[in-house]
Length: 309
Image (cartoon, rainbow, N blue to C red):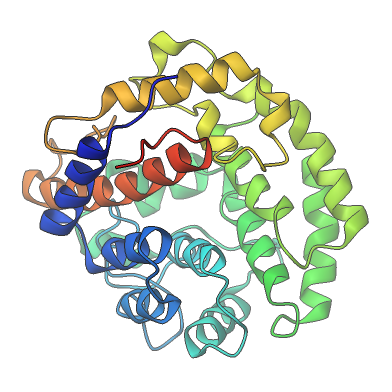
């Protein structure tokens, strides 16, 4: 079985601590070196605005300092990963932001605000096209945000959650098994919420167990392009989707990740918007590489693919 050697692990760590953001460095220390969750929370808080939302390029392709639903959902995923308790101010402020910005009429959170136009951003984040590009934000990011609200039920208005959940379950039932890749990831975040009622969890997970094999890219030759890979939906063997992806495909994806590591210890980013703003993209690329290092090392460890020193 192919493994990432101790030397290549060290190269990834070295790249992260030379070029990565303090947030990813804190996340690495938390997951691999016994670091404290409080350090992750402090680093994450530097991206949070007074309205409780996250901005400041937390989502690296979105360089605006203004809060956005997508950046705040990104922050909530990190809070979930470190099991931040509801007593944490960074959690409370983020929930407040979601409650204050909820579009009750359409039962959604618009993915980005107009302020995205005032800072460098990838072309897919252009505000004027966001309604079309993200199907009205009815799933991405709304389904994931609902999941994060269920992580903190004591902080989230019960009436909002109840009405939104009914709408979301209807949307999920009407969705074909082959989904848009980002929508699937949002549904997974919803289905993995710690406070999601059991019956809803069972319904959502049953649907996603059909959707995941239909949606991921199963041709390894296409994995160098931008797309959803097996490890993107089953990053650990404990994932509720792990057993619906062919084991041979998961093993091939793990081999692919190991083989794709660059000499400098990072992994390539399969998209690019340097043609829009070369300087901004250069920074975004470095930020993404730090995110990617943490993500890939966690998956490799989960599947026993990190060699011991």
